[in-house]
Length: 632
Ligand SMILES: [Zn+2]
Image (cartoon, rainbow, N blue to C red):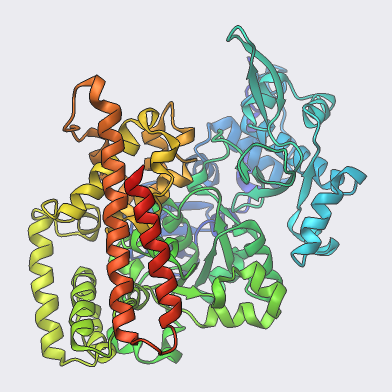
């Protein structure tokens, strides 16, 4: 039993811990009258600030949700800590030494799991990894960094380290520093093996032979790590992160936020990139507001985290869109996406966020599909800055993606493009911005605004019908497309099979299935989720949940729906044949569709013109593929 903390010491913590600084680490505050500050409440969802702080009195209160208290209460609530842990954390920051009444000491003796000990273990591990980066063994790691344009100083600035190959190097180091086995296990830095008899066996290092990036909370404390594979014989995933622990919740951390938070608050802008090296490249290039999610998609918790730092969210009036110089004064969340399907799916998923957030969301697509790290390496720092400056509003990005692939030179192409884009415009829930995009769409298509408006209105009505009265964006995205369409149905059955009975799928049957197999974007996103969850080869326990996790919360209901859909075949002896036929059919449909597309393109190009030969070669290849497929 740990001792209780001396009362005078608690009072000293209350007095010395800087409430204003501590709140500012999580919430952007502005002046609200004499001696009072306000910002967006971190404890409930709001768009105009009702969270007030009085630094002189050491108190805070939210008029929206009624929460309030002193600095200790703030930390307890913000970090989900028990009282004693919150006091210890604040004492550490304020330099107050705590005395314990009944002589007990907390931490090492309390059985592990105490937040302070976990933070300490992560801090010690981070230091250890940094030292290891200098060893001869870590040469591959140093070469990896150098090859991506990161020298010694960059590695030091971001605290990049190296986890040695041995199975227990860090484990022994932590033991040597006095950490108990339960503490080490609770930190997520080690895993526990299984012996042949199925009993739990010894502990071993989770990260072995990898480059490691410390992931810090907004306060700057290390709460976990992201580790990249370096060696061919490493059978683990390319990136491996700390598992969920008392400290590390992947939906609530953003890599780089500790470094970026000041500039995010000052510029009202945040740049969301894909990986650790992209964050480094951005910061080193001068884009100091860059962050990345750690092994998960950008979700609602991240939105909350970011918007509290950016400040109030106010809807951008439509005329502002036409005046880029004014636009910069409004909050901007900029995502860097690939120009390919994956990027478009990511954009589609982000449609789930609320309209106020969406109208401030921008997309920057790098030339030649380079990520920010590659871009900096090949074209230098200014190219990274230029990439971010080239951002376009999310809505524009998604609409233009829908137009792509249609030949806008022909009337048929323009009508097809309008059909593809109108439902997207209809989905824009921000009342002022929807009509603005309908006008812009008419410009991009070269069609009469009235005609485009009609198409948007029709799409909006159809969308409402499909969504069964659920008017929000989430429903519109998550609801499946027309199930009567035979192609849509075939695609759906294929996903049901992949999700419901992966063990029945022989690798050869699924070999030809890729994103291009599917016409429905949501289904393509589910297939991406299957791939991200490790592919059907890694199915097994928790398969469906893992896929649902990967697709993000908007599409997760669709995954659930696909999983519970009754399969038309219920005789076990026939199941294998059924699975094969379903997967074969969707591939055949896809090949036939693509053959038709290439034939159409060849007709438009005309024999003897540039590009005809390439299209013809593509046609031959696709027809060969379909022949092989049908003979199997
Ligand atoms: Zn509140």
